Length: 472
Ligand code: DUC
Ligand code: ZN
Ligand code: ZN
Image (cartoon, rainbow, N blue to C red; front, side, top):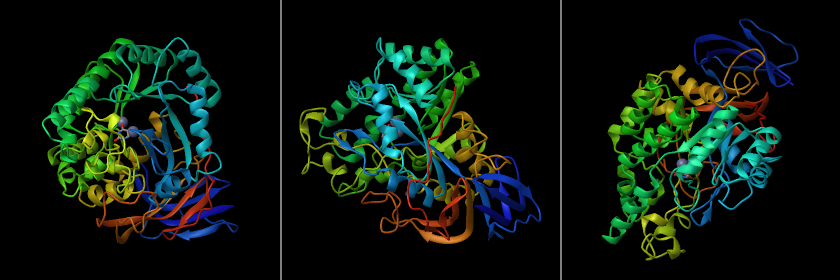
């Protein structure tokens, strides 16, 4: 099946021009002016942007975490992604510390196979490094087509690893040309701050941010940078939220460390006041690292625009408000054993995460492009092209080039709407962006030429996505 998109304003990471694009058998066949193809479905994109499919480099679809499991599956998660213009998902495979890594990646892949409508791959979580780990990871790279790893410097006693394990993971990756993504917060400091605040009776969601202040994140980043410098590993800091964290990474870059920086849409468009909302509503905004005060968000926009920050993901981690987030409510604590003090009901029990895979591009467009904080090319560069380049998917993904996959987003800049839980496709019972006015939407979205969103409506049937094999 062929698709001919006419008169679009074609936007890539490097240029903007008006033209036509012909996709045949799932790949881009021709880009130019006055194209015709008798067999093709023709879409008139006059007055609309044509973007390469957006890539979310950081999502959780299946996440057993903090005593519960995230809410989406690949049916809802990939549909939500596509409705928002995201055509490729890179999910974190996060096995329990005692789990077998090969079994884990097969479990995570199995969740997506035949169900995901997006194309997808995984960062392999290293939650333990012992004498068997190198062999398992080699098998995962060779047999499962994975080339990026994920480590947590936070979540002590759960997903987190210690310094010896960090050293071994980075050395292993450096030897094999793999990239290591990392959640950077000092786990000991978080644990101590949590204990202190809860013992002082500071138990509401608004105390989550003070328990993991910017210094704690900056220390985590500096820590990772030191280990990357010592081992020569290429690293990627996920969900960078604040000024000192970016500064710790740029200082390391100046010393020659190969480090990439990701931020997420929630840090750019929300601020710490949301976690202070009454009636436990603040729990909706609890994620880690926490959402910071506005000055940090402003700084992140600047660093996105000037190219310091490489990518924007979401850290989509969907938990229901009425049940899961309420695990940290005094009246509804489900598992007192996880509490830092042994008492039920405090912010340390609120599952960390914000559902956002559907909203990333809308938020970047509305609050970034329309407000003059970033230009269209920066949108494409940070939300599509750079993730593809960094994670070995370019130019199959992240590009509008002859031979690239026909992952296409026709964006209507005139559309005006509002974000709401009543219309979103994510499985959660709330939206962190409820009532937000939105400019623009993904009108048509294709994955390898298959039209999965048509005139802003879902047109997929599920399972159209493919696993993306990568090689180091
Ligand atoms: N941070 C979150 O907020 N949720 C999932 C995991 C993480 O690192
Ligand atoms: Zn994280
Ligand atoms: Zn994450």
